[in-house]
Picture 1 (tube, rainbow, N blue to C red):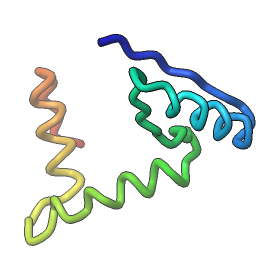
Picture 2: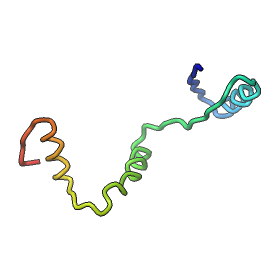
Picture 3: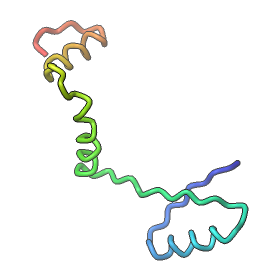
Picture 4: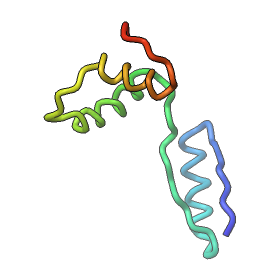
Length: 78
């Protein structure tokens, strides 16, 4: 099965195209929202991860130390 991605600038024309393609029996439509690169949407995605650190006694400094040690850099000022 082949897949294609079509980016359409106008919502009403995108809806018309989707309606047309849905009438063709050998085409399956999977709609996806456009991914925004703005800071606000990135922060929304980040806040979903906050539960991962729930009930863990870890600081940003601990995370930095582990990251630098992983890279082979030993720096106690992190």
